[in-house]
Every structure is written in C-alpha cells, then in structure tokens.
Length: 268
Ligand code: BTN
Image (tube, rainbow, N blue to C red; front, side):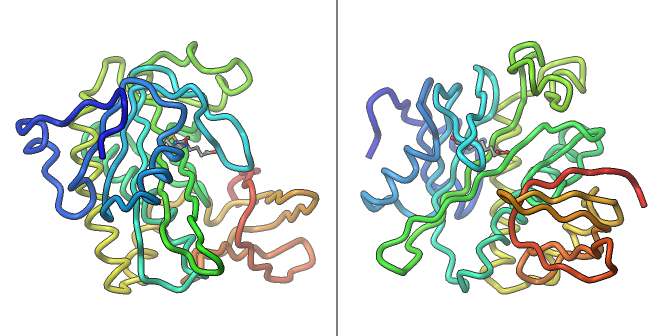
C-alpha cells in the first residue's frame, strides 16, 4: 500500500498519533503533487476508511474551483479517505465537521481564537490559516468515497506564500511567534476529526451544527457569495442541517446557498 517516497510510520509515532478510526493507517510523504490526488489513488485501490495521507510539501496542491493551493515545506497538508453512509445532500457536512475539528485544535493547542468562515476556511483574526477541499469519488451515480483535504499554514513565514494572498492569509508560526509541533498538531487534529466524524455517523447533525455556529465568524455578517456568474449579497442568517448558508438578500428574501466563495463585508 505504501507508495514510492512514503515513510512508514514508526510505532512511537503511531502511539503519539493515537486516533481511533481516522488515522488508523497513515502514509507520510516528504513531497507529493497533492495529498488529495494520492488519497483518491489509494481509495480506488481499496484503502481502509480513515486512511490519512500527509505530505511535508505539495508541488500541485489543489484549492477549490481548480485553484492552486500553495503548500510550502513545514505546512500541514493532509487528506483523509472517508466513506460516510449519509445522503449525498449532506456531503457538505464533511467540510463543516473538518472546519470544527481544525478550529478546535488551534484553540486547544495554540490558544488562538480560530473561527470558521463558511463554507471551508478557518481564520485567525479574519486571516485564512486553513482551507478545506472535499472531493467525491463516484462510481456511476454512486458516491463511493469522500476525500477530505485539509491544508494548514503551520510552521512557515507568510513571505513563502504567493504575494497576492499574503495580506489575507496567516500562519500558526506568524500568529504565535514560534513554531508548533506538526506531529502534536496532527495527532490532536485527527482525534478531533474522529470525534466529529463519529457524530456525523451517529446522525447528530444538530450537535455538530451547534458547535459550528459557536465557531462561525460568518453568521450575523453582511456577506457576498459568488458562484461562477452568480452573486448574492445579504445578511448571513443561519446554516441549515445540510450545511447550506441561509442569506437574507437585499430584497428581504431568504436564499439558500449550497456552494460559493464567501466574502465578509461587515459585521451587521
Ligand atoms: C481552498 O481553500 O481552496 C481549499 C484548499 C485545500 C488545500 C488542501 S492541502 C491538503 C489537500 N491536498 C490538496 O491538494 N488540497 C488539499
């Protein structure tokens, strides 16, 4: 199962990364094109649910809408293979639960006030520290696996990111003024992911969404949502049980938004 260039995790490290379902198989790579691509390849070859692929750097990291995700060395770039038994309309809840797990980990380990911007960003002080890319592997009409890709700007300087994102992004190192242990962060993150995923499998959607609401920096704000040519501006009112954002537009009409780029305009 181990790919070329991967490093078999030793027992001490596995104990440290003590997680139950998520992370029960871990593949480390020094360099990869994209952990999501490697996760897809392994999922198709039959990797067990919860398998996690981690890379120190990616040379073709993937962001949403086909964008490039800059992934310098010392970041945390990882993907998890999941096969949740949920309705396809609830697939966005995977992104929701990943946001919760990342924000929780940052709060617990770094004591920083991480918040979630709908649908897939974790912010510190309104600057992006993490992006999440959830992709489906379909066979015919059926969703076989979901790949949960999480990118955390961890232990590098902002100057290593492309210039056009330097003003809107941050790193854990930049916020803390020192480095954090990537192993410790990953261990804690996998445990938080595991807890949240369990809730999803137990269909405790309300509990998950309650936590998301507490961590959200989007609800209550004036937002602009762009999805291709479409654009809606209004007040972010709620998240529904499928992970869609409910926005009251300028005509006072409630719009249910499933996907899009969200721009925070102001606090209401
Ligand atoms: C976004 O905000 O556009 C989502 C970025 C997701 C980046 C992560 S890094 C680990 C995983 N592998 C990838 O190629 N992309 C995701």
